Length: 234
Image 1 (cartoon, helix red, strand yellow):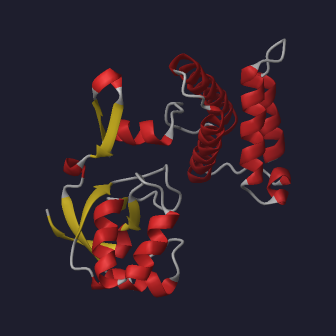
Image 2 (cartoon, one colour; image 1 turned 90 degrees about the vertical axis):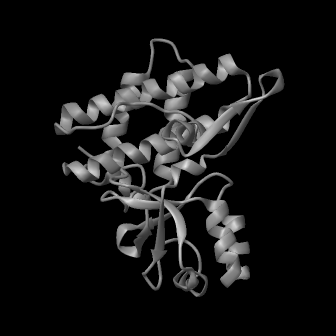
């Protein structure tokens, strides 16, 4: 079975007797998934390796999240229905993967990236007047200090910027034992809050801090591999 055939099966199971919004969302997410992968991927034979199937599950979940963000309109009831439909599609995909490859996978759930970070404890939510929501980084989430030890950590920033992480004596962080949501960090990783991390980085490389401020979104943490840092205090 090729990946193209696999997703044809997903769309077939998601399609109702009459075309509906879930059909449209499923089609959009599948297009997004193949847009993010090389063209020949569609005709490649689907892997049977547990780790690669787990990554496939994560990548399609991300495609569903991107699709959801595209069609949010700020009306609570409609947005809740949107995420419920996307969760149903991911559940169909999960069931197909289990049936065909006999793998174990996380439960299917699709929410916005921000809601995902609230659920994980990375962000905290407070409610103000008129039920207005406010989000901020949960400072208690980052419970250790780390020091970067790899000369050029992985990531999208230019190398001349990244080598300056070595100059910072300590950064607030949290260690994740395993992170299937981030390809390349399946063994685990360290999360560093963006605000505090870039404030420290600005002291040693202002130009690099400006670059990273523009590149990374407001709430996403900085991520380092277990082999890229060491714990200096708890």
